[in-house]
Image (cartoon, rainbow over all chains, first blue to last red; front, side):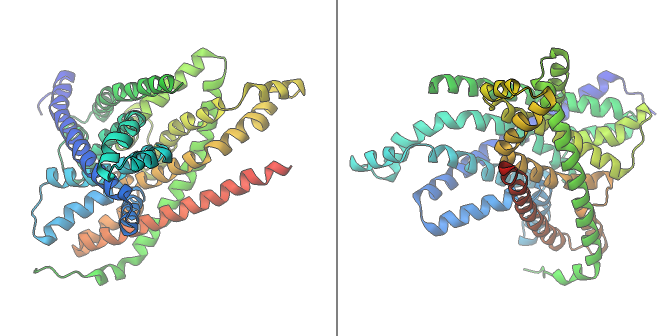
Length: 217
Length: 223
């Protein structure tokens, strides 16, 4: 049996950690785009669309992320798409992220006063202009801290992708544990690495919250 | 399309799903009760004037909130035996849920406590209530009432998160699903149905917590 030093463990985890970062970023960016589209069509106000988006959010917030990934992983092949764990994880996490972000942002858009909408409408602006020039710039300031805060949830969510066989930090931890029989050290290192990714994000979100509160005063 | 859906293939195994749901519910109830209890103690410690205890609790909260539940679970189940602490799958799953919810609820309840006006506490002191009485009647109950919606969502999140406990072979709902699809190879159908079951469970749990909140906080107001 080959010997694993602590450095070997950390080095191999760092290699796998790149995939955690990449998956988080991809899911967050794509989820943000989908979330923004959902927010737009929802705010535009067709009652059927509103109902659909509400159901979409309810579905993804009311079921486990693991089940969502399983359904994507086993469901897409049934419609003829052969998906790798990477594609399934990206797709599933994108949907998951979009549902949460669209809900967070809805609250921010709704916090912009009704008078703002009416004033801009009275200036003859159409929906796109109202969104672009009046509502989104104001909503954006409120939206940034909780959005950064949610990015922590996305990073932690990527750990679940290990279960459908995507080799990221957690999966690498399991594989190294099976080779070294040192679960305490390995999972300890895995936890530390997640912490090193997530804690700065948490601190940044808190910093932004404080900053925003001062501005609001 | 060559694939034919066959949801009927799940029917013979329905008992596994019921057993799984019961275990998921057990995990959730124990995790929620003890976890929120831990959160109350944590919030008290955070609000107390003892800086060392407050900091220790702060480190615990940050460590848990910034690492994935799955890793915490693996650490408890696979890692702790190295220190001589051997747990069954169920014990490890419950412990992980308690520790996880404890950290989140510490933070949530603390926010509620911070929102209690100082004047309330001073008024209670002037009525000669002792510290425990003040904490219980003047600080904790109104604080819990205020943050009950946030706490409820967190409990639902923990219930949904328990699906990864199948990875250490705790026989909850997802474990049942994995088991069934290993027998009949109908992965999509099984997971589709189980996702629906989780959705129902989360809706019921949310309703239950709302009723519990009404019972706990609305009635007491008149006492």
